[in-house]
Length: 338
Image 1 (spheres, rainbow, N blue to C red):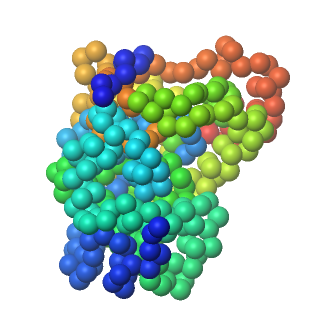
Image 2: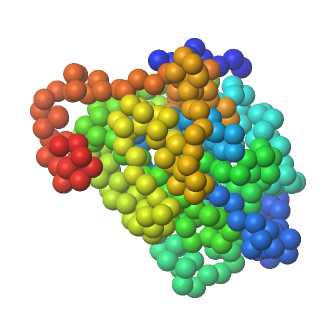
């Protein structure tokens, strides 16, 4: 499938103790966790905030594997036949097919279904399962950590990259990753003006899987979208605080689009611990998607040029703008939007 035009039953208990069906496991895996931490940059935030574009831009660096929203692989991408940015379904993409075959040899469908059941309660923003994993860990928590960490390591090994980008956005997933052994976690909290986010979420999109729209997107109610924006960003703040200031930074969508190269270099400097001079854009000011899953439909374009979407300033009705501003004012002020 060619890319679209460019844009300006399943066993709950595994057969062997501690294993997800089909997943690689054993003493060697435990040794790998202890001996070879994998560096993961986790992009957290609310939707329509530029997280996919930042993921793709970071992937321009030679040592970075840009992956998209890895939380979705087990949740729906694999079994629903969703598309990779390369234009093939993730099942048929040579990179992802090989990674999954290596990661979950045998019955990968059952293994991914089991992983999805482990993920959901642990990736919620309010999660008793995460609390239990920290204080009274058991087989499920160990299984989840082992298999999730192994995915990142398989990606690094298959791509030959030392830094893996996961733009799953969910702060809950980030909080779970922060407690896992064998993962050197860095967090980028991506924000965007609430009014721009809410305005974008008011627009419907019909299903077009080949164009990157995996399900029908109906307009979100105004106050619901504003409340979710605030809640998710507060949770992302908590995630950043958990990993600490040396391993986290906040990036505003508006600043990123204005200076993508400066933003990417700042993130990579934080991760590598030395100044970054990586080129991000080509001579025409473009970035090029590779093998990202889920996320923005724009990943299906062969190339992307940077252009700030500020249509809300022109098109958003004044009444709606006033309501969203009032509902999110403290955080808008904290993020420098008012």
